[in-house]
Image 1 (cartoon, rainbow, N blue to C red):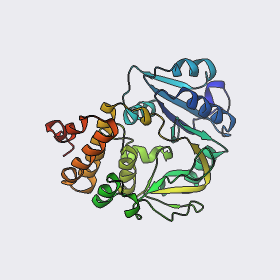
Image 2: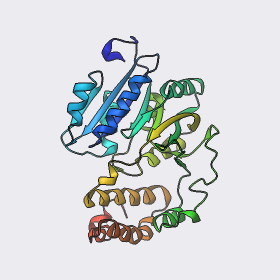
Image 3: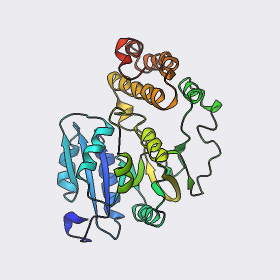
Length: 296
């Protein structure tokens, strides 16, 4: 950790963590990073999106070696990560969810793989539930039918998209791993960029993986690397307005990368889901004129 003078030299790895009101989970993550720190110079950057749970004070008091960037409000996942990357110095960049915990030398092994496989632009890992069962964390890029089935809660009818039968014990090339734990080489980010901030909350990782894949880089799932993931702790507390923005992100992805008319098919399905989830009429705003601004 460069802040303590340990492992001096050029920064090899920058770990970027965005946080919004996940203080206790973030504390556990930072403790695990300290416990499993790699043998090379690295830095940890936490971008706080205006938390109201004293997360910033906790970081300052307990983890002075962490670089903290404080936003005065929730700027969304994509923009917060981009802000963190602007300060990052590492040859490799690790995106970590604040609701994760490292259990071994995951960071070191991910760096080693990227160094020995120059055709690989990004690597992910096996995500574990707190009880150490395996989470499904990889998917194919979705088709329009995949979207329809998914948002009608007919997931079992889209086995290819959901990669049913995926062998989580085998390292392999994948299309769309979750950015909960995703490491990219700086050269890949220089070539394709990091997050498109139009996808402020959802599908930003899918869209990023699409650009990495389109640029000819491999994305590899590393079966031997494990990270515990508690799962979507910030979005579970999302307000109706925030959920509305999530669904706009979904529509934008399908319109941009699947089919220009995707939005017209998915919009009523998502509007109904949003109405049920929030028990309000906010879903109607997906159908109204406001939703045509880049999400039709």
